[in-house]
Length: 208
Image 1 (cartoon, rainbow, N blue to C red):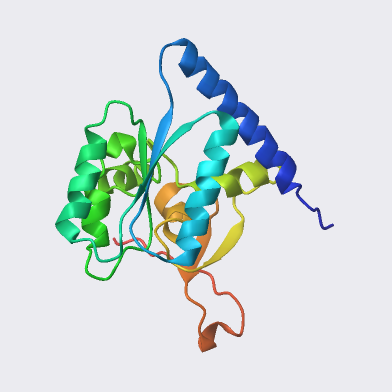
Image 2: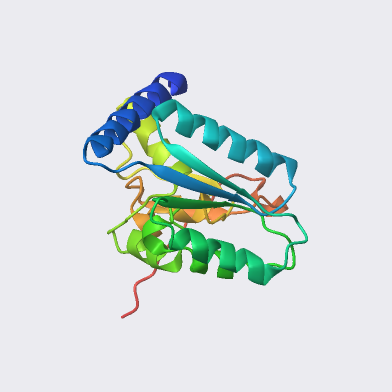
């Protein structure tokens, strides 16, 4: 039987939880502040950053909005992240991808202090996720978890198919890497002609 999950209701619950956590930190003298860094003039990226800032305002999180022109030298971008790392008024940093072609996105992610890397894309945080000791869980896979939990969905032993290998969704949600949903097998891939016949099961072989 098909069940429609009320995503809006789940999102409202999450916002309430975050708002309460922000208030608790405020009573302890900690002001929650997220720095958003936009390095390109990509319209979709501008929209995403605007939405994130709006969500922060709704739950009481302050924001620092950093926008860099698309032709800003790469070195200046790395320096910007270093300055945010050292800013005691900033608790978290989110660099909106993609970055311009002349900028090494991997270096950008490595430049973020792992404890301030709210997207969880720093190599240290990815390693902790794989090891089962996540500091931060990428937001979209975590959101999927919350939706499944809201529906009391049993995922242990189930098969899942993820189309795509993105750093924020496809790779983190693979249970072979992160144990996110307890699935027993998953094949993460881009859609191709040979996939038209339907999903295939991923097999693992143990070496003797």
